[in-house]
Every structure is written in structure tokens, then in C-alpha cells.
Image (cartoon, rainbow, N blue to C red; front, side, top):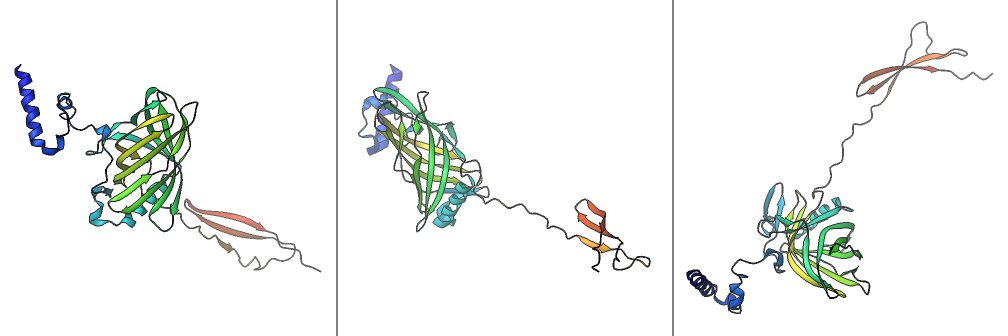
Length: 292
């Protein structure tokens, strides 16, 4: 009895302190601890990033303090170019610590009348092109979609990565189709609001929103991280030592004429410089017979 009284007083105090934020929340919802336990990370709502954090040279800072939108665009271009035809890993993450909670993202859907869960654990980059005239990258992405242990056939997503300014970076697509049922196709649309870019280790983080329409429908929101295999820095070319010129020396002495005569041969000593040392070779030169 005493525990129930303490719980009731705590909930009423929470309502008073929260003010207008919880005035539309029912008492039953509070009793079920939906709001007392804190917001669910997996259902974090899609929102615009207040400040985009960019990490470079092992240091992280808000981009608006020392970067321009062109710098961020060029860095993202290098990042995706270095990882073209590679697979990005996807994970559900905590928006505060930016650490993975699961090795995939999941959302509840209905396939026909059957409840199911859809999973995405990786995305393969198929092609990258630059859209002239604005800070836009055209990406062809292949999402690895599974649901209830099945992998449907999905078309590539023609996505657009748009850098409007240092506080607005968006990855979206018009939708891609998946054959999740025997009748009809399901269209899936993705919106990804980026708020974290790590150029040193190839991480991209942000809030996502996925929606399905068709025979299979549903959707969800949350925070996810993309892990790319390579970093954003251009690859340095390998330096090669220039080829050394071969020096040819013709050995002559008093008994050997400077120029070969008809019917005689001359020995030419060739020295070739190599990294291991100097190699001396003896080459026989046979003169052409003189014309009569």
C-alpha cells in the first residue's frame, strides 16, 4: 500500500514538473512506465540536426565553427569515392554516445495480414555521380532487406545526398521496390538526416525514417550509423624510384683498334646500376661486313 502511494506521488510530481509536455498523456500510460522509463532509442523521431559534428585528424567539433558546406561536400565525395562498390554496415545506434546497439535496424511491418519485422544490416554502393550545379551526389544503393528470415528481390535505390549548408545534410530516395509477396510489389522510401561524420574511421550517423507501401506496409524511425570500410582521405600514390640509365663503356687499349675492322669482333662492357649493386656484363658486338 505504501509503495503504491509513493508511486502515485511520484507520477503526480512528474506531471507538475513537466508542465505542458505531458498534459495530453493519459494516466494509464504513465502507470505503464512508458514515459517514466525515458524515450525509446529505437523509436527516436526524425528531426533536423541542430549541429552537425565532423571528426577529422582525431578531433571532433561542430561543422559550423570552422567548415563550409563545400568542404563537407568534398569530404563526403572522397569518402564515397574511396568506398565505391563497397558494402556499408548498418547498425541501430544511440544518438548521444553514437555507439551501436544492434548490428542492424529493424521496424515492424505487416506482410499481407501477417505481422513481421523488417531488417536492414548493410547497404552496397553501386555507383556515384556528381550532380553539376549544386552540392548533390547521386548514389545507387542496394539495401540488404530481410523479413522473418526471408530475403526479397529488391531494385537499387537511386538516392540523392544533398548538402544544403553546414546544418542540413540529407540522404533520401524516391523509393525502391521489393518483391515481398506473390502479388504486387512493395515500395520502400528512406530519409536519412545526417548529423555526424567521422572522416578518420568512415562513420556517418543520423536519424532515419523508413516507410513501406503496398502488399507489405509499415515503417519506423530511429538513429543509425553507417560504417564504411575506408576513410575519407584520398589515397596517396606509391612513390617509385626512377629507372637508372645504363652506362656503356667501350674498352680500348693499344692492341685493340678504336673501331672494328672487317672480320674482327669487339667486346663492350656494360654496367647496369640496380638497387642491389652494380652488375657488369660482357656483350659481343659483331660488325657488319663492309660492302665491296
